[in-house]
Image (cartoon, rainbow, N blue to C red; front, side):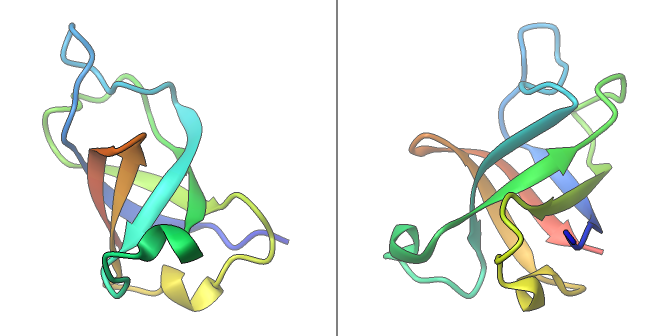
Length: 97
């Protein structure tokens, strides 16, 4: 069973109309605050679910969970910060609520 948690997300990129650059549910690699520069050697993808109709230029509440059941659940505890990536570029900054 996947552990789903609330998080706050601040988009760093936007669609041309100012909306979120990704649909209401998507999965991307995430770098967590405790990981070093070699984070890709131990990376995990987060599934993010959000209300696409919310103004993406302001922080928004989202729901996140690891793409796979074996993800490190202790990384999804309150206060943990992460960055979502779109390839090599940061897509959004987040914090588990």
